[in-house]
Image (cartoon, rainbow, N blue to C red; front, side, top):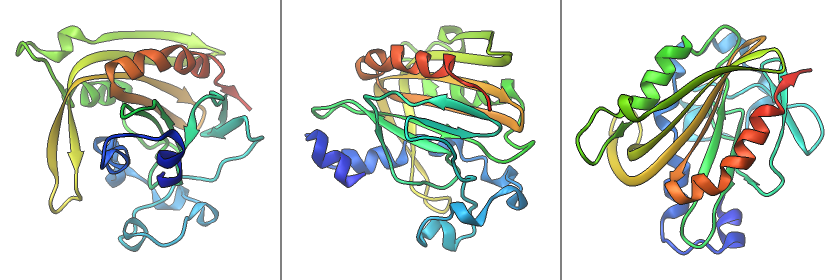
Length: 220
């Protein structure tokens, strides 16, 4: 992450630390079956690994593609890649000059992750609207088939309540003007979550690449 920040010349102090926390609300780690996690995917010891939080299964395929949960997808060439992180299959970074977003890809193990609608509702619950209206009313939700896989997507703009800190000292930081584009792929081994979130203008710039990536998801 630090190398990516230096390379992209991000201007905001602490932005890298912020990126490390986006998506923490998606952990679901209490639902993960540890027997489904491969030891080969374990990164160097971190606080998370010391606490026994499982790591995602290893990836396979060429550098332009990644895969897990029985599917593979094409990675946008213009996106950076973050280090291995607990409970994530991958993390991609996009945006420059003090504005950045990230796309987290989550897979919690075969048969894990919960129902699609429950996860959509949880993502909506991470937002509030400046006018006080229900963010659910502003969410654009669609379900379609991509390469014989059911995909449920969501788009939502507002104030993103970013979770910071660990379970013992968790707090929420409101991030105004944020946008979420998410997609839940019902993969052969369980739901696979793609969550792009960040400043609305950066997310909008990355939207075309995001949807191209989703359209590329297929069984391997």
